Image 1 (cartoon, rainbow, N blue to C red):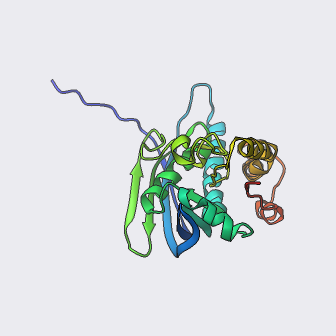
Image 2: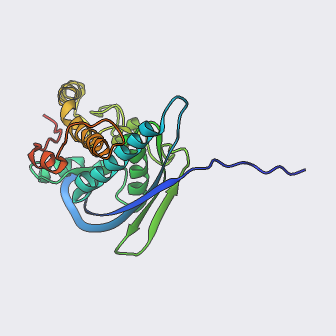
Image 3: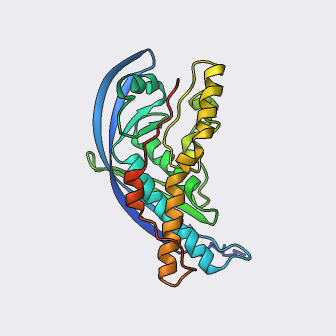
Length: 254
């Protein structure tokens, strides 16, 4: 006798944003730039909320709104117009773009497959605990080809490396950026253990800078939902003004 398997019922929120990246190609044996290529993508994603025991709808709605705004903010300000390169091009970027205002975006390889998988993992890392991004699609405007990835559990894709295989034993972060709950899209490695310890201390001291954007988003969402009568009214925060005033901080090796 066949039994019908019950599937989890969920309502999925879907959205999309266009971004541009500037791919920089080099090689690990030189700091010279091999090529630069502009790219334009439409990034679409779907996310759903899970109501945990003891959690009310109001709290869940707040988490969903915060998670959605975090993803949009990350795409608009930390992926859009970023300098995109692979792990072997770190010294090339430092040599030629150390003073640029562009944000750095580093992936295991510069292709749409790794970009999609890294963003899928990052979206889930920056979402609140009750929110899961279950699908992502990245459409390349140049080729018209889209790369899709789906996982109802929102786990880190198997194709992505651990930090020991990405930046190595001298990595300045314990986890890759796509697993960190902050706005960074950056990783690097030190030249020796002494430098590694020094840079990690700098990063620890500057953690509040990395948290500023998401803290401002949370305050703004609470304010907007408070004004709508959905939660208690909070302080009004102008996120765009916060973004303009914020000093750009990029960790660099000493």
